[in-house]
Image 1 (cartoon, rainbow, N blue to C red):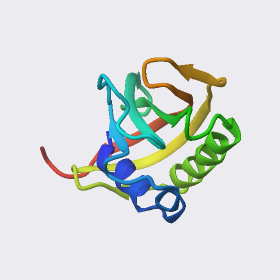
Image 2: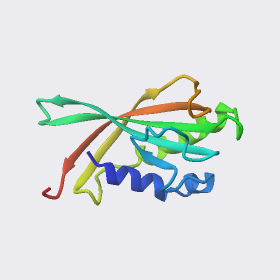
Image 3: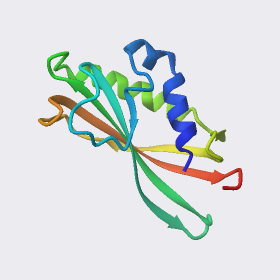
Image 4: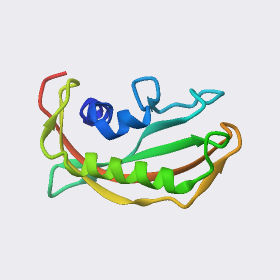
Length: 140
């Protein structure tokens, strides 16, 4: 599914790094009991797949959640700017190989959520979703 290509691209982006995002705050399918930090973190969620017969591959749905600790900031504009950066990173990924043996062919935006609050993590949050097309480039 190109998991490595996506995560590596987000971790390598200078704008996201400047915000303070790193390997401990860009998390895959995170569902811990508490937030991983008191600033901002991303949760990468790999969703369902729809098989497209005439393409011979599956379109995969992928969501990035941006959480910001309420005591750090309650400004959704900051989250919107992070979502814009993520859109730029993923939108520029075409035929990008990942270290997991999958190449990301294309990431197409599907839309963004409304402004949300997460009472468990004590964060404000939003998400952005994509349709992903990828291919296996190395045998498993």
